[in-house]
Structures are given as structure tokens and as C-alpha cells.
Image (cartoon, rainbow, N blue to C red):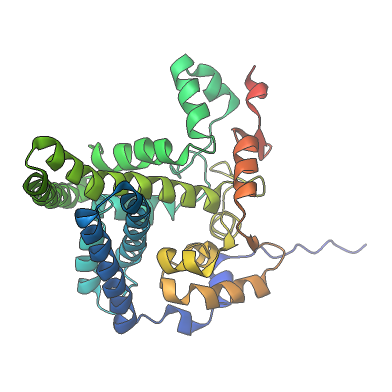
Length: 349
């Protein structure tokens, strides 16, 4: 009687090994060229907003400001992973600076993103970013909690969700990090607040100088700092959503979860127009970034091809379509972790 042969379990190292070693090669010149390009564009957009003669000039500049903040953030994200350049100290300096326009505390981001999100992607009770709630959890919410959930998990939800759950709760209001992170996060929080105070003071001065009143000063602060930050917040909240929330992506209980399920199966490779990649620096090719955080953004395209070719049946690789995002927000409401499937709100009624 023949024995059934067990299929070997795929390990994350085996996935990493299909990616060419050249994809992990860091380049200081390439990283700095991207930083320089985005900083120049950001400065030009802010200058345009200061000098803008009419609303029809201000509106497109505000949208562009939100996109440039997102571009700087993605580079700061790479620096926080230590891969933007070939100099670790330079990566830290750049990371601290590049996250200022998005109002992010560098060390709090490193802890929440690098250690927790990447370490436990799509794992119940661990990955806090766009973490689904169960039927029982939804039923236990009050009326306001349910309303908030319905808003945040709608097509318009990326802004309020990211603003509250990620930026406020895990960045600004975060008061009980692990002991070894307390001093670094406190230091970076103070640095961020001082930088924002200086930026707001400068913007207010320019606005008051041009208008001669307090309203003009307040409007200048709003259009140079606040509105670009809110636009960025929607963009980054939406970006993280499409990377990890889809009817195709399963979330796992703690005991069932494996690294391969989190890093290979738990995210996506989304093809976006080249003009979007100009701002998002290939981060929508997200699977290789989760498989191996040592891959700089400028090598993600080659790495994505290698992973897709090696694991075509386990790689979600498709063109990004807004229609699919909207359909996903209608499908992905509550989650059954044991069955591994999304449920509608009606399941809690």
C-alpha cells in the first residue's frame, strides 16, 4: 500500500531566493536623485500656492501638493526601511526629514510599520492596518461605532480611517510603546512638532504679509500645510487599502498564519499608469516589498516580475481599477476568520 507523500510547505526564504540579488542593491546616487527631484517639485508647488492669483490655479496646485507629499512619504518610507541609499545614517536623516510634510513621527512609523505591519501582515489581532472586525465585534459596537465603521469601510473611508486609526492612534496619540522605543519616539515627536511649528509660523507670516489680516495668515497655513496633508491622508489610506483588502485576500487567525501567507498571499502587484508611478515610486508593486523589505523602491519592478514568474498561482498581479476598489468596499465589511471569508453587514443583523 503506497503512502501519500506530503507536499513540502513553501517557506518565505524560498520566495525571497527567486528574487535576483541585484534587486537588493542600494544606490545612494539613485536615492538622492529621487529625493532631489521630489523636493524641487514640492518647493515649486508650495511657491505656486503662495503666489496663486485665483482659485482656478490654487485647486490643481493643492491636488499636486497632496501628490508631492505622498511622493516624499514613499521615499521616507523606503529610508525608514534602510534601503533608499547605501548609507544607513543618511537613510535615517532622510527618513526623518521626508516624513515631516505628512506629519509622521519617524520612530513611531518604524515601529508600527516595519515591525508590526510587516511582521504580521493580515494576521488577526496583530496587523492593525485595515484590520477587519468580526460579526460579534460589530454587534458589540454602539450606534456611533457602527456608523463610524460604515463610513470608514466605504469608498470614502480611507481619509477618516487612516487619520484616526493609523495617524492619530498609532502616531500622535501613541502613549504606551514598548519601553525601548519610548525615548526615540518622544524625541521624534518633539522634533516633528518643532518643525511643524516653524513651518506654520513661516506660512502664517507670508499669508499675513500678503493680506494684512489674520484670515489671510490662517488661509496660507491651511493651503500650504493642512489641505495637502488631508489629501495625502486619503491617498495613503486608499493605497494601503488596495494593497491588503480585497475579496481575493484572506486574513488568518494567529495560529493558522504563516509568513508566506502574510507576505506573498496577503498583498498585491497592481499596475498603475506611469504618471502615478512618478509620485508613488513603484510602491503599488507591493508584493516584493513585503516578501523582502531590503528591496529599494527603484528595484521593485524587476523583483515583481521574478516573483510572478515563480509563483503565478499565488501572486495577485493585475491592473489597478477604481471600479474594483469600489466593488471591494461593498463586499469587504465584516470578516469570519475561521472560514476565511468576507461578510456583509446583514450577517450581523
